[in-house]
Length: 505
Image 1 (cartoon, rainbow, N blue to C red):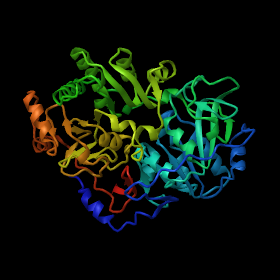
Image 2 (cartoon, one colour; image 1 turned 135 degrees about the horizontal axis):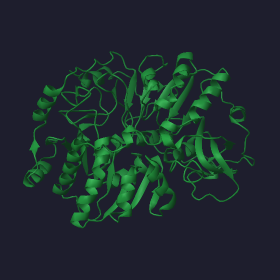
Image 3 (tube, one colour; image 1 turned 30 degrees about the vertical axis):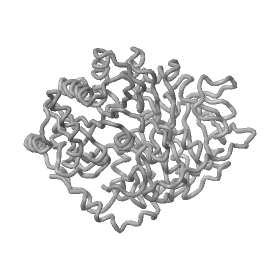
Image 4 (cartoon, rainbow, N blue to C red; image 1 turned 30 degrees about the horizontal axis):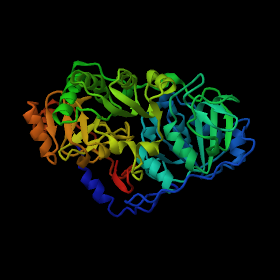
């Protein structure tokens, strides 16, 4: 049994979209207008001794808005250190705006309980902090944004950041920095690029500071106000995680093989194809199988994009794609490629997915392959709340790429953890059904009724197409658990990538 989130949207009909989520103004549904980047930093001597000096110089006080990036993912050490220092100073009522939160950030739970942190805005959350966000301890509902929506909020001024703290593997004394060099590389600092360009103040916390030229520059000196020596801002072993590793089961291989056949039947397995696969075992396991289909057909693609893994790198090195556009690296081979491969390009979150950017990379995607926690009859997808009621993720780039791609494919088994993954109504809408074309399971394929052209093409190709209802019935019969009821009051708001409340949980 699942909750009809149409009830949730009706309940939010009177929620004032201009009301603040902490200090953030909910953007109007047209997204607002992009503003120019900040004025260049004018500090002649940017090197500071430590975090305390940065707090003093930039007068970080109660109610400040602090942002962070997640390029070290579950290996991040910087956010915990910054907020521990804030607690030592007795600060209260802070808003944090990290691009993502992971189990490594468990110490933040204590800061939420003590009032150091009052508001949270993020694109993804998993672990104890995610549980705390649902607990009701925050001063307002937490806000979940898409990666593109976060970039839009920063660039329009809907999200005003007082100080952004940027963990970097390598920096110069003038503040220019990178995640593509030094002893602890994490790959391009795609999310931090936007924060640095629009925050009131930017502080780089670097493992190494050099006077030499950088091998790559992710953030220019003009967007940095201070640089601090900070040993080990992240542990590179924490970059790869369960959601960034391809599944290796027979079920995953069956789904991946079917995805390649769907792409071919849709007429997109041709020269110039562009591809992104989202985090999730099934979607990532499809990468080499799509590559094999391309090789057999003699097809050469244009670009791969998104969060990049070694599997993507292998396809590009094999000559199956011309280049890679990378906003973040999901594993070590991807990080290495971002440093050495001249056809592996860094991009900011705005270049990647900002809905106000007419040239955003997602707008040029031929195919997007995604995962799902739940998918419903309207093809709405939930990748935010699990059947047990816990917050287990968030939008990330899911709705951005789904809306931009010519063909959006969702991959999933029928059940997981005892819960049905095909449901009458998803617990909360992360990606709208209008942006999803095909569901590929390990049993059959279901096609969004809005795409009768696809149904005709796939049936003509002899693929096992069935109705969503048939798969739904099968999933419900296989399920052994009933989903936990949704909270009667909003603990989390999900923002539409273009602005405005999409749903809540």
